[in-house]
Image (cartoon, rainbow, N blue to C red; front, side):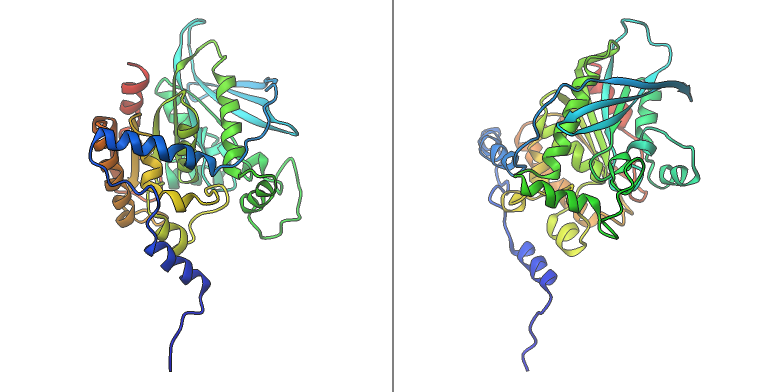
Length: 351
């Protein structure tokens, strides 16, 4: 009797394990890197599809208050036709009228609360638990260290999840809105990534007009799905001078196909045909990059996460930028440890 596979998912796993992306990096020299990036980056960016049309962001300050040594602001901005986003901003107290600081876009990951825990909202037990579980309040901590931080909800999360306030649209049932929005977006030749990147760039446009922000010293950081967004924001916006990708290092055959640990906010048609995750991260080179990995991360297993980092390190070495790549391998779970973040961003945003 012949035993054959009847699992479509196992088919995808085996396809992925056997697959060698078109732009798998094998070079060793700066010339190799330059030629590779010159050819690969435009094709990778093209997988995002179209971007939404730009509109006047029309920023409006909704509220300002003080809490835990920070001035906290809530803004609303228009990010594309038919859609707005609320933007939270944390500013260190006592800034002079003309005192400029670097600004960091703090990207949230997958979860019900969006930007709120990232920016330090601790008003409910559930939010406090999110922060405790994942070191999730980096948008608050980095502002307390002296940076200006800002964040918006990506589509499908927080206030921009249609099942939650203020929307109350209950047609999705148990389906994940980030996957549904991806389906909608592809019907228009877009992706959730292209939409979210466009919205993140609008938020950066707005923050760059703040009198205390030095628009030449901008960074980005994010955990998990926020690491996805930190990666793509860096690739798509040359204004980003330094980036931290937190617990978003792995190989797609493993975390994607085997573990099904990804969603519509992380993918683009044909992307894996071109690159695996280490190559995607490597396209950031030679810009400064801090990679954070949890040794006991149950979402992105350290075994393949470190394989990802080692391949990334070969790309940075070929780019003659090894000194701009750093690793924070911490002993914890899926979360931000903050061991190197302050020093890293000071080095590259305050120089």
